[in-house]
Length: 352
Length: 259
Image (cartoon, rainbow over all chains, first blue to last red; front, side, top):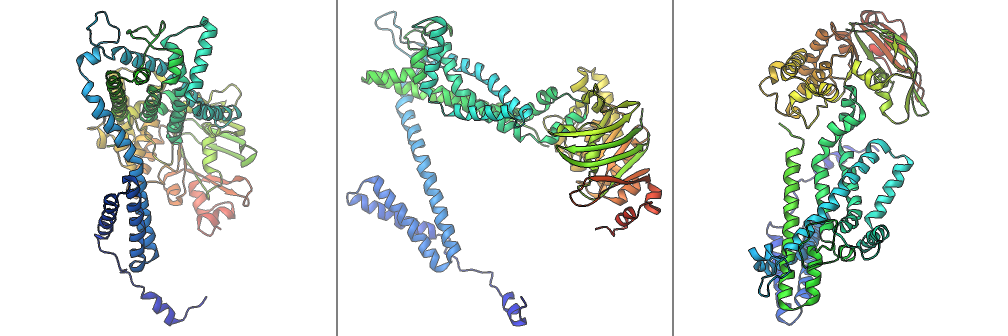
């Protein structure tokens, strides 16, 4: 491994300036690809097909151009950049289109009567609204949260703070993973069977729906809380023990407050996940036209069930109601997310 | 309130692995005792066994006797929580509680354990502890700001204030200056000098000059060989240790001829 003086000198003269494509190169190639796609549309090809051809043209042309001027590394970089942007748009387009459709179709139906009347008519000309379904959604989801948040958070505390990967903890982790994959209709059937056994046949109530939803919620809450608790550094636990603090107090006063922001976000995500469930609620909470404020007695309608019902009816006014209800459901989820963000910000560990 | 610590025939394990073997020493009350030695020789492990923090790690255990104030810390009926209230600890990396203000950090030990304090009492404890940790003048105008906003050296002194606020008999320090700059280090060394009247202090350090500067007694730990357990090679007054050590291995380590 001895290099001659000439070799060393030659090595010292590695050029640092590499040829680069002009800054506007992606824009130029993009423009050409767009023109190609538009041409295909004009020639009678479908919009989706043309878009795919345009993207592929961009992903081939730009790296090829780059390969001749910048070399292999530059070409790979440009191709991966293009691919990542393309997949990003593929992921975002359905989301934006869905939101746009719900807002444009649903927002117009929203007014005071829509939000404050139920389907139950006491007079022939009384207007209808989705008040009963909003109440049902809020109550049943609240019930589900009241059941699953304590269970989920405490299970996660056991797994992280006490279980420390012993056999029981491993078994619980496995079961939680399995529970994450339970189809929602199975959770509904479980609640249906449970309440039928307890209270006899043809039993319907909101709390049954809450039980079904909590089955879907608990694994998400456990998982999220577990992750957040594991992020709390052991330094803090040791600092607390070294002050002569018992373990349970360390968990309640040091570990949980430090992880609170993340735990709240996890709980909100879990709520957002179950608030749109339809199938289990059809089974156990059924549906009604009246506003039912009692979680423990009688049928309750939730927004997803109402949307399903209106969609089945299929006439124009029913369809408008369904879009309006979908819009309200999205608003509720957005508000919940914002609330969790704000609360998380308030409790997050502060710097400076 | 300072208490001496008598250590006899202590073996420390991680599961089946014997990490430290056969330690005997007497740590004097109201003095500073330093532990030096190469990495992995069990200094920190031994220090953590002095307030039963070692057993926080799953599978870790200690054999032998560690007697503080006539009571064996490892007696069957001893509550580790009660031990830790008597033997406080400062860690290598500053670890103030991120959700708490400077004020609450200092009071953390008292609030978590004793419950409610009167506002005037609490204020007095905070001022006394922060003055004790030489931090009062720097933070007295921002006691309600988060503890994480301080510099590294200030955070470490905040942790010392938090440890002395519960008035322990012994204060253990696990490389308290290794993450700090020379000026913060000097501030903490001055502090150790002042604190030794009130507390028995045990400090682990990688810095031999620091051991020579701050300690009255020094213990040198070493590994017999790679994979063998660590043990205490020599325990002597610091002056003797650095001028005329008993063991040739100690002299080799102190003079830099080691390994």
